[in-house]
Length: 157
Image (tube, rainbow, N blue to C red; front, side):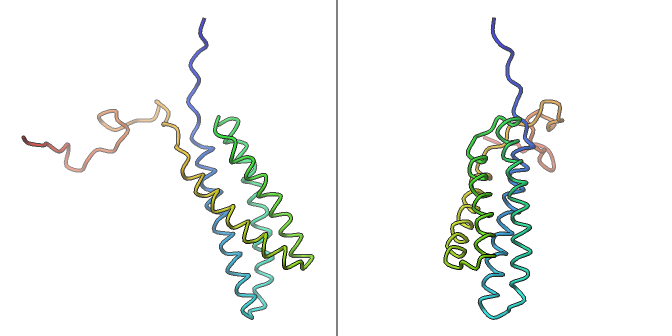
């Protein structure tokens, strides 16, 4: 007696992972720009740097939940979960080092964090999306591709 075929993995966890990693990358790059602005003498940027750090910390915790959804309901790989957990710990340490004014730790960890976020972004976008459900209407030929404008193209011999 064989077990029934497994249902296809849902697409939504991977789409959410791509979205959250993209947003996390944008916030991390903004964080670098704000730090550079502060170091360049625009001291008001420090408050923006702090606010952006709080948004980044919130988003990395949201991404942790998304990475868990990729693994369990989505039957995806484990690496997004453990890398996001590591990023979460690093972001918390980064915020703590910033408030403690431990600049050597803060800057070094910041460089490592941005590198980790960028690697996560590339990895999330390299994960293939599962095929769409059969219930979704496909193209006229059933291939799932959009039809060419003007109809099919004939190739003469």
